[in-house]
Length: 171
Image (tube, rainbow, N blue to C red; front, side):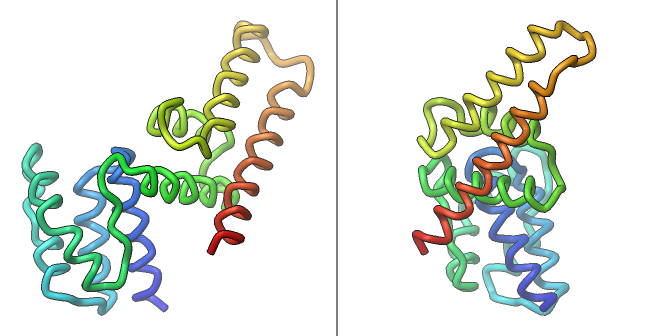
C-alpha cells in the first residue's frame, strides 16, 4: 500500500506542477518518496536525483518527467493542458472533501491557477471566489450577521462533489 500512496502523491504533484500550482521540488520530492516506498524505474531515479538549484530544476524536470511517469503507468500532463487543469481541479476538490483545505481555499486556488480562461469545469468555482469577495465587501470586515459565507461554502462543497462525481462517471 505504501507504494500505491507514493505513486498517487507523484501523480498529484506532477498534475499540480503542470498548472504551476506546485513546484518542481514537490515533484522531485514525490519521486524520492516513491523510491523510498520501493517503487523504482530508471527514469524515476533520474527525476529523484535532479538538482534543486532554483531556476534549473523545471527545465530538467521537463526533460525527464514524461518518461518517468510512462515507466510507472502514470499520466503525464503537458504544462497548461486542459487535461492537466481538470486533473488538478479534481485533486483540489478531493482535498476539500477530505478536509485538508477550506472551501475558500479551493475557490481562491481555482481563480489563481485555472482562471476564467481555463477549463470550463472550473468556472463555477472561479465564480464562487468572486461571490466570497462580494460577501467580504458587503460586510467590510464586520462580523457576518447572516449565513452568506456559510451558504457559499455549501455551494463550493456541492461543486467539489459534482466535479468528483462527473470524473467517476466519465471513467
